[in-house]
Amino acid sequence: MPNAWDVGSARILASMGFEAIATTSSGHAASLGRMDQRVTLEELLSHVNALVRAVEVPVSVDAERCFADDADGVATTVEEIAATGAAGISIEDYDTRSGMDSLEVAVQRVEAAAGAARAAGMVLTARAENHLYGVDDIDDTIDRLVTYRDAGADVVYAPGLTDLGQIRRVVESTRAPVNVLALPTGPAVGELAEAGVRRVSTGGALTFAAYGAMAEAARELASEGTSTYAARALSRDDRRAAFDG
Image (cartoon, rainbow, N blue to C red; front, side, top):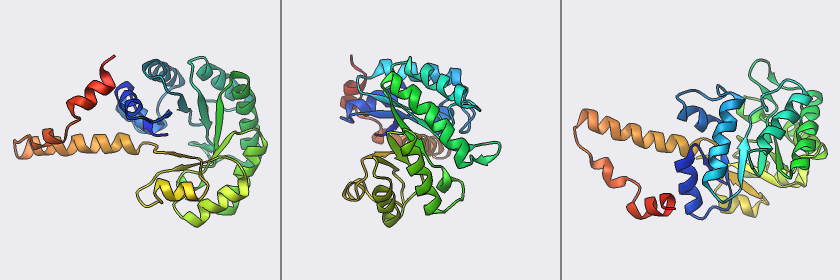
């Protein structure tokens, strides 16, 4: 389930046969010229509305911490995102102001999100953010994910894991569908499938790969005055497949 950052990237991914796509908070923020976690809920809702209407495949939404400090607010955010026609949503247990939520706080938030998602027919993914923020405690990560599963999450996700043995432990311990973030130092999709992983997403990686290619092209243009980068552009056939119709 690759992550799109705008309508064009969503249509390209859908045209290439992916059966579902997701949004990416960091990629969406970058498309607005910002760093991650600096997008408003209103901006996210507009973004999701555009993507859902641009493609025929299911769209899952990276909703960060659901833009709310209490369980009622979490449920409201899920309901607002459900109204866009999105097929899924994720919730994180990291607060940019105070760090990792306590398990007690996090599970209350997951329960609220799960109830609202279930009522709307959406898939809820609950994320344990430990490994993105320097908490390399696999036991705590597993405890969190099991608790989120019991609180109603349909999918569990610990972004940042790259060790196949740890990933297997998560799959075996949670006994729930597990999402893994594809990383340059992590296992390939085939290895993850063999380990029992049910879904693989890309986060902001595709966004920054595309932006990186643009930056390299711009450097060539500025320094050499040449345009060999154009030979690596999206082909006309791929453009027609994505953008015609």
